[in-house]
Length: 213
Picture (cartoon, rainbow, N blue to C red):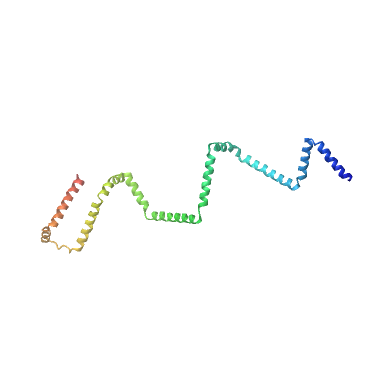
């Protein structure tokens, strides 16, 4: 056995019999940490520390500390959670929108603009002005009040328009009157003509009572 081996064995026995004190153990840990830290690790720690200080400085200058009480209140009453939920919904909606949907939205917007342009060129503004005048004069309210009765008697209106159209066609197809009293007397002998005259007189009386009072 050599002297070196003997010295190591003696040190080991002494260390086993007399354990190091806490101060000696802490000093050993510090020395081990110093030995394990390299220059590259020191450089990275310094860089991270500088970035952290810069971030803290930006936060202080941005006034985010003033917003901390409001954020704490939002966390307490659940508003922050709801905002997060809405943000997730918006994000999901953005993810769901495809290029095809965007194209269809653009097509719809273009068609809407075309319809509005056609309405403007068709004179719809004059119609709107007329409706404004009717509304200002109260005529629109009267029309709205009479509209249900008109709808209920729409069949009568259709028959009246059909009669006028048929009469106009019949007059166009018949030969032109020759004039004179005798043709008029022959026309008066026809029962249908007499009934038509009777109907016209009845309508005239009612119109006179309605218009003249």
